[in-house]
Image 1: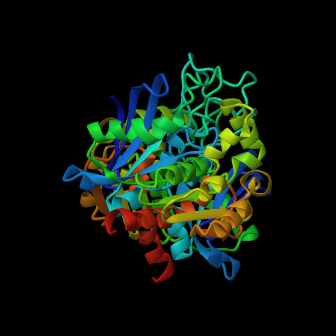
Image 2: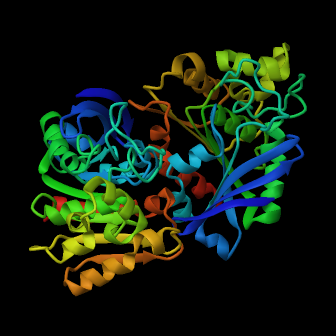
Image 3: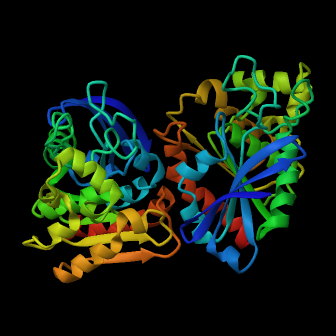
Length: 280
Length: 280
């Protein structure tokens, strides 16, 4: 693991690392914010999963999260959104909603994607093991959150691994990739035509299979141009009710899909996770 | 004045406008954050001046200022850093520290720069008149701050116009363009060889001419790679002492020149200005 940069921020350190990923079969870059507390003792960790087209850097530069991570004494790990590099196949037309920058946090089973597009394993298994080995974080106390495609990633990963995470939250998540164009395009290619395989990565479906309940917080802007066609928060609300999976879903009036929305409520999301990481 | 975008953020609005500037003789773009309070009554305004290579957008996306502007109920206006457009002359070698993105907040007197490079007049006179006419801001209550080249801009503009601003602050300012390579290059070309003309835009010189004292706050990172050669905070400290101009200069251990430094202390700068805009 090679340290690319270390910049002091809010009394802690904003770090960037490069490493060879065995899950993804390529070199990967990720960012970590370590609060000052980490100099004394391992700190809990929250994973941030970004949306379509993002790298590990969007959240780090735009969300204003460091201030609150420092305040609560938690680390934030931000991975990239897909495998990278010249050896990794990409959408032949350079689409922004499939291939590089659009890994959808699944393990691809179809060719030519299966050799690299395994972001699920990377986030759930490889990255926690890597940071646990090299950084002062306590991976027994983990939470996860994300935005849009990354909101989908955070929710599905937490629902499939309730013992690994204490809480999950999402901004503007894709609530049911089985039922939106982004999901159709990505899961159809990564997982193939059998839609039953997609259910394993569909938040609304997974809610019906949950054996235990995690604390869940979802924020969605009412002025989000992707809300009706792609995100479909109404489906999440119905599934939560139908399957009696309690969660807090907040429709935030007037907010759009941008990082200005995330920056407006990032304090409340970090406080929500800190509440479960530090005191429960 | 054309509205390019309006995005809800922290209960207020992040706006972007385009207009024809008579000072700069070109089209200009600037950003404004209006807190929710501005829907009811005109609010005080703080101008943010950015550094070399920036546009109006760097501060808006990276500083995390909206949260605190919303909390205190103040607007923040972020202009661009130079005239723009195909008709505006630029450094013949495309340098990043002169020409476009590097207006240095002066009124150029030398050709071919004098027709456009008049950022001093734009910030001090044209922009306040424009926003006062079109937006719910109270330009009788103004403060100003900035970063690096923009810290130099904020300090010199406030020192030359103490009646127009209630307070001034700077992150990592160029403290004496008379005495650093960035200043030599820019002022030499914008203002010509007669260095006495530069003194009118040199913070350390202006401190000796001040007839009244504004509240001044300066933050400087100790790990800033530009500190010794370009910024020279030691000169500001000496000039402040010599001329008995009181100010708070804080050397912040371990911080560099980046927006991670700005984001770490933006709350304290906005609180500093709000204290003078709202309650004095």
